[in-house]
Length: 135
Image (cartoon, rainbow, N blue to C red):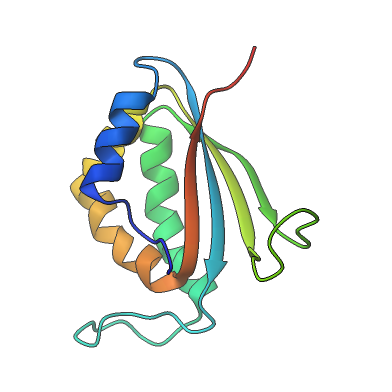
């Protein structure tokens, strides 16, 4: 079953378990749809999942930077050396935020939320893993 958007339970657990006020890294594993899967009532033009994600990214990167964060790593995933045979990813992102609170505030931003229609349409599956940088 694909994982595309966090549930209320997952957001609550994230807020409770991430260290308050400390920098975090968000690991994104992305698998794109060949064709973006917009809702039937959407007026979006047909495009690839990668193209839809690029539309989302224009807003997301602006909001990440406004929250005090930045993209630390963006890479094409090629070969999973240690993973279940059927698991594969197209892209890996590592995004730094000054705190979990800054990340959650960004998720609540109206402009960011409006852009997530493109992210949801773009992705066949994803993982978003909160990490603490080590000194």
